[in-house]
Length: 136
Length: 136
Image (cartoon, rainbow over all chains, first blue to last red; front, side, top):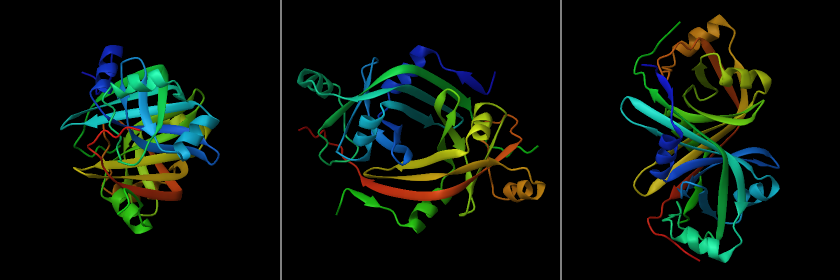
């Protein structure tokens, strides 16, 4: 069995659906930025909420984002990466729909901005982990 | 107490030192890539090892990387972000030095390439987490 395996699209989506915390990478005026975010997915798009600040202005400047979720257990781990476009949700009915999806903000500050990430590509890998230091 | 606090430089370094798993973001020919990696730090640089592939070729193409570690506990979390330059270590004595740093590869495949990340900027934030859905 290989130590690294490619996840099926279904497994990658299932992993995304079963987790809440990921990290979003975006372009800003100062280069790349990465932020941990709580997100939710309806298996089509990903959604999160944010206060005004770097995340929101970054997305407004460049919608190209990369999103990552990973999980480590005793001897196995997986990582799912979503490449897509992030856009602020303006439509009230879409915000109401997102509110039905059990989106819990990570930090209890006011976050009135809803962001939708539309995936262009979802990929996932699983890893069998080493507890040994392997040299040479 | 604020829900988001900036970590001191010492605390950010301590958090980096006490963890093993982070994520590296790099530029590739196909855009941004993000990978989970096992790393180690000597509180000056970060180091990891990698097999030949996307990570190595990405760094060779563009040394500008962003690295992130985060950790979630019951009601608190933190995230440390390192912006820096990644370079393949060629010098044998530096490789021997890295071998003294308890660098455990995540996956037990052959990883003969040692990478050094030289930080330009280290920043960290801590968060008090919400278990409530806050709307509007």
